[in-house]
Length: 163
Image (tube, rainbow, N blue to C red; front, side):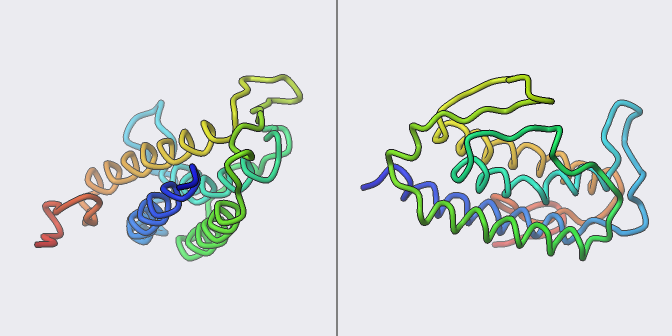
């Protein structure tokens, strides 16, 4: 079995769960944040919408520089869902094309040309899936703090009994 093959169903599942969480983000609370040091709700949701694109980038490019990355804005949930869907599609296409040897190619995260870190693409892809799950969980906490229904992620929630 290829090294990429088991990543595809895992990412597909995480993307489906993440979309359900993004669907719950209210349009009228974008600037809300649970603490002064926290991201505003709209920025956290936008980050989650961007993240699958980072998987596509890791498999098709050799770097990502924050200098050229989009800047945060406050967008409607429908816009974020469309962006998320586009990024998931790009990630799935990149994963489907990836060969085992592609996973060993070095990839770098940069800020204005300065290398922050560099690792093999395979590590970056796994790290990005974990990173997506982490920020999705934060988004779930924001929903709970706003007393909005939290969707099932890995099992039932207080709002959704899936079995």
